[in-house]
Amino acid sequence: MDPALRLEKLRRTFDPCVQCPRACRARRLQDEVGECGVGRHALVSSYGPHFGEEPVLVGTRGSGTVFFAGCNLRCVYCQNYEISQWRLGNPVGARELAAIFLRIQAMGCHNLNLVTPSHVVYPIVEALELARAEGFRLPVVYNTSAYDSVATLQLLDGLVDIYMPDTKYMDPEKAARYSGRRDYPRVMQKALKEMHRQVGDLVIRNGLAVRGLLVRHLVLPNGLSDTRRVIDFLVEEISPDTYLNLMDQYYPTYQAHRYPELSRRITAREYREAVEYALNRGIHRGIPFEDLKHARFGR
Image 1 (cartoon, rainbow, N blue to C red):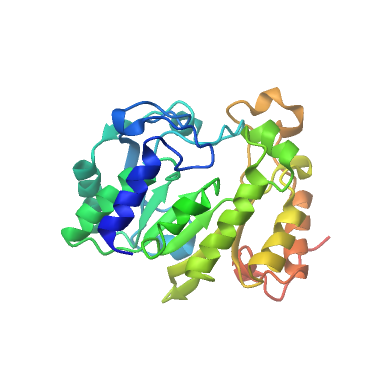
Image 2: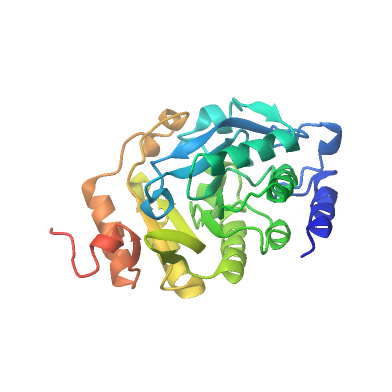
């Protein structure tokens, strides 16, 4: 798509704002704050090389993360709640954000990792176009909760190299209770299908991801993350070659103490059962599957 046309179409979705599935219709070009808690300009909390991401993003020089404050979800256990819910960040205009992207490249990072971008797509694309005019060339990672509008994702076709969505739940009631959006499962599934249509399965060259879909799934205690149903969806409706990071690092934080069912870490057995189910369904790429292609956990 012509960059000017892409930018104009995104601008129209920004005022009134229908850029994400909340469609709150805030006049964000006039700096009215949307339901995401953000107005005209993106709020940047921090940026720089990050070595805690997936190894295929980190490599030897780190993933160039830019953490955007605000969020279109209200996850009660958010591990980055100071950024997402308290919106600790500084407003940056397009030229300043473009300069950040160029600094990430100058630092030697392998990619530009846009963390929580769904509510600031228009400011991001504004900045990307300015940065590209000055020589920016890193692969772009769209690191998202997957509460994304398909219409907005379609406008990113050809601009994003790697989509990295979370897959939180398949049950609307759980999505409403723990993330504030009953429609999350439906939106997430449509978003992943569009992402995969654009970039396909993850392509790795010399140990680094260069293009494709990389899915994250955080295993919650007491089966609250619908892990088996998520895996079934990925295998049956996305691809059995999906690169999946099945994450075990949940811990109760933010408002999780108000929900007894979320008030503990997961057990070794819960994680083992999740991994074994994924292996039995044919998932074989990602974490921990790269090290377990021919193994099973002991009982």
